[in-house]
Length: 80
Image 1 (spheres, rainbow, N blue to C red):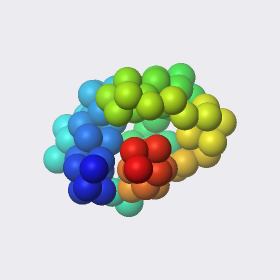
Image 2: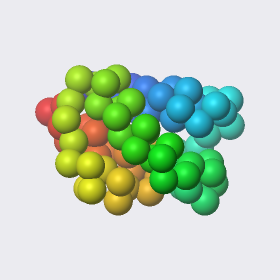
Image 3: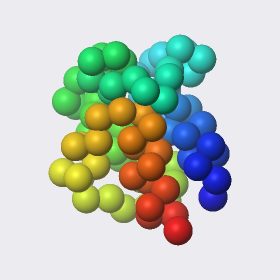
Image 4: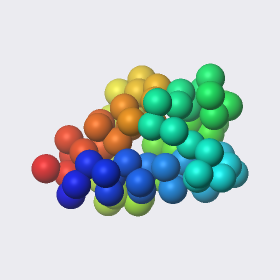
């Protein structure tokens, strides 16, 4: 799966979970500092990414990822 496709899907899921316009989300955005994700929403993001991509991630490792592009890179490792 192409990394741009993964990034686009991460943005789509992030927008849905955080109730944001996908056009306003940049790859360099921090989930917490730029997008305002709270701890409960961060857990929801991990679960939503797992569902979107059909993968299982270590929750602690996934929660340590802090940017949109970082999440896409993290998820892409599970898709290879």
